[in-house]
Amino acid sequence: MGANTGSFYLFERGDKQNPPKYRDMITINEGEVSCLKFSSNGNLLAVGTMKGIVLIFEINIDNVKEKPKVILFHFFF
Image (cartoon, rainbow, N blue to C red; front, side):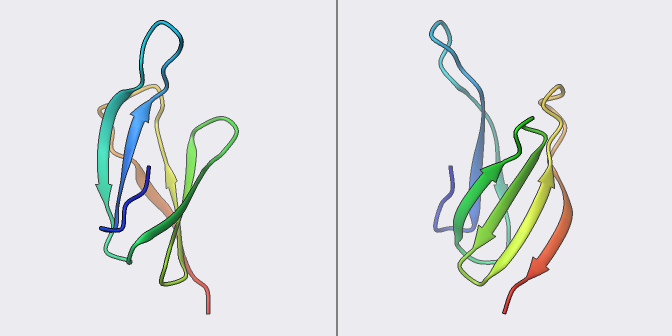
């Protein structure tokens, strides 16, 4: 989930038996989060901001204690 505070929240996937579990809140200083998109395997997350900035995060889905890492930062005019 994204927020207008420049943060987004990560949850572990749930299923019919177990609800999603809160994993982490990531704060970026690049403006309001306007969109989020996971890769098909769940290891990458693209985050777009209202300032036209896109960040790509690498997420270790097997180690919930490891913080996501920014692997790409791009500004669109």
